[in-house]
Image (cartoon, rainbow over the protein chains, first blue to last red):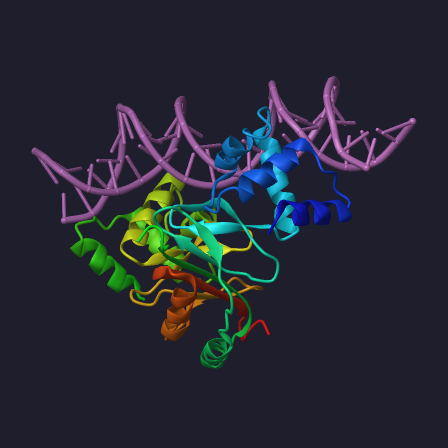
Length: 138
Length: 138
DNA sequence: GTACTTGCAAATAATTTGCAAATAT
DNA sequence: ATATTTGCAAATTATTTGCAAGTAC
């Protein structure tokens, strides 16, 4: 995902391209490790030093609605975000450095069909996150 | 999971069986839908009317360490808990009534091996939650 | 009897809201 | 020019901690 793509889609969706929003977008793209709103704010200050935490919250909400970020459900809480590409829906997270990348080809259909049969539930959605160690950290 | 099993293991692990703890355990077992600490407190009041919210938090922590409850990562936040059986590790959640049951046989090994190969990560753990509609709610 | 547990009150942390000033278009 | 966005301050919500009183063993 590039800054241009995000800016374009933000704009097309009727939102303004402001300095604080750009700063958050850059902060997210410059580093693939997941981060909390206040960590993202610290990174974003490099691009817009006076950015307020409230603006970071609001920008994350906005980017989340548009599918450019997603909340990470880590062992220590669910207050962090990572960039996300539209379409893919799952993160693979490095336990050491926090790098959160998306992986391709989540095909669980036969597994889900079996669980559905066993339980009587219809299954409509799933949350899947993999945790491990990235190649750099190994 | 039964009250007796939990009480026994709590006791064996050196913890005391108190009225507030029993109330939380009963509140959890009486209903399989997941609930927030304060909802659990409301349910537990039926068994011990003066129970404090702090005690509910502490009891949930304790039960969580022992593996009898697990946090549910729902669409609206990660502040809720459901009962868990030792060994199984994933919940299937009804979107309508909140029933959270565990399912058997999570075999993702070949899937995980493929992701590992594609990404260069070693994969050590995973978080999986399925969301759907239970047979009663259908 | 003693160590563990409880629950209040207070502290801390996380998030949201109201609103006047600033800014993108 | 105007509607959107910002960011402060304050409100709200969630969670943790200190500690004196209560309770299980």
